[in-house]
Image (cartoon, rainbow, N blue to C red):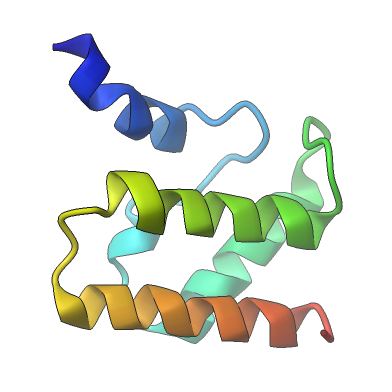
Length: 90
């Protein structure tokens, strides 16, 4: 049973970022990006740059924890990647 939930555990107990509750369920890509940016910039435990940390957590969620995402929420999260790049001036 634990093997099925490892991705949820990583998302909820990330060693690098303290995420807002339910951030990946929000419907506003810009709000998601701003939240991830703030979490990444505040973290003293991340290994890469704030952009790398935020983007990797978002991508991880889409690829693993979010494998059962409906098409609408997947689009929101994919759009959040672009918002995240914009938030970091990339």
